[in-house]
Image (cartoon, rainbow, N blue to C red; front, side, top):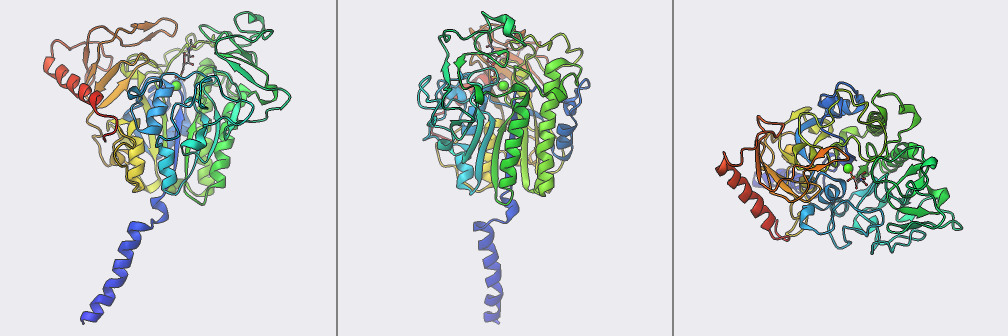
Length: 511
Ligand code: NG6
Ligand code: CA
């Protein structure tokens, strides 16, 4: 009898050991983060937009979880991406503001990234599309004609195919694993962010050469008839074609997915849509009725549809966790004459929130976010308070990778919120605007630190939320952040102020 029992116990024990150490395939889902650019809370039809239709993103939301209270860490690209990929608040680290096109790599090789973590968990990793976190060791000293190093392979990405910075910044070329794609050796690239190249036309001096006119900034190098930020010359055969960026990076993403369909992969996919210059493929031109900004939203929607369709056709959708979101809130006129203001009609890119890209007001960081993960996630809408800073630790938790002290220091496990099991989410989120002004929001109340930054960006018509006085809003019933209650609700003001101060004071190396 005794013997029989122990025989019976053996398989049970084996099963238990196996389930701890060797995961069933679905416990290692593929992970795709689609990080769109400058897409506002109100820009998608699944978030209430009526003037534009985004059927593919809506379908993702319909089969997944649509978050109504998700935040990027910052109201601009570089810091948001830094926070997402390192799990460290960008405001703890110097030099994480909007990066120039010749910036050195902001994430140092010795830093632990979400890609490193995924690799440790056995994943094949890739970054495709917009990067905007610098390349090389020293600003302006990169060897654009050789191998730029350090590059993404030094921070956990097995494969990369990227735009170094933004669509409006030189160099306007793709980099595959640190090397410019299609570069002809007899036509080297030169990049300079201070001095124009003799004999090269610029937007400022040669407006007659432009097919897209600049509104503010963006008057330097001319590439494809579009004026940019920064100067460049050479590399003709390598220059990207703006109309083809979405198609090209989507094709690269599909190639990576297809090649890795039978092993776990992690894809960080940064779209160029809907950042300026908005020059979508001709098949989208005029289709939104809202000009290039609306047409770029349609292009983004197409991209999302393509990615999901490929997953479907490979039969791996249910074993893939897809997270779609945006790096910061919306902007209408961001420096080019593209009729974005004139054709906006009643469309409200910021939804019910105040401000937009760059802003400490809510639309700066309250972004659309959708998670889809087959049967592991119940479709619906979640009001859980969520920050992109937590994606790192949530994935680590899902994959049982321990994050020891100092790794992803600000990232907390929010997997239950990501999968819809925790309806409440974080206790608070910290938001950062263009000027580094920090706010803290607990799901009902929001405190904005005093700041000597400007109140407005006149050119983009953005209220930055900066004020020399501290502000407190009850977002629960004042989504427009109109009624400053700082003096009336001193207790709440102080409570949030203290929480923010203690968050700021946290030593970098503690979790
Ligand atoms: C600003 C640019 C803006 C955009 C932004 C970065 C000007 C006048 N404005 O400096 O067009 O490129 O930087 O946007 O140059 S982000 O979404 O990548 O953060
Ligand atoms: Ca952006």
